[in-house]
Length: 196
Image 1 (cartoon, rainbow, N blue to C red):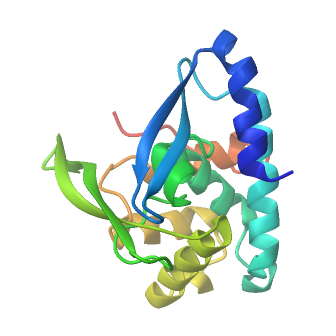
Image 2: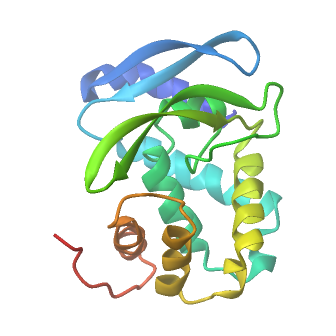
Image 3: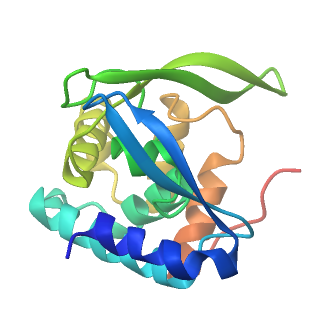
């Protein structure tokens, strides 16, 4: 059974947990994309399915050979995609909020991005990358990390500083969020409080 079907199976039980079935035009195939919007957070079965699917995708792209801590990848993807629950993750397999071209035809979907600019939260136009799979999204993530030279940084705190410095996110607390998520996932990172 595919992960998408497993996630679809959560719809039946989802009504009791506040899941709402939504329909969206999937630009990748020109077909309708079903996706679930969770009210009150993503339920544990959906989070577990996401973690399993991430592990399979990471294995498919030989992530272990990079020497990077897997916890960084999982923490960032879970934050960026809402445990695989975001429309972008469900309809476009974009786990990291990657902008630009993906591995599909068409390579992107037009939309908006919430950014922090000069201390203000604003919405700006964006071209979100479309991917054929989670593995495609992870491959693009690795491509960017290697391009920046961050793949040589094995210390998680320094690594997330690279992500922020190279513009992965405009949120000044982005690095702390990833490190805190790594800690919550059991990757043993000691972190300081976020900047208020």
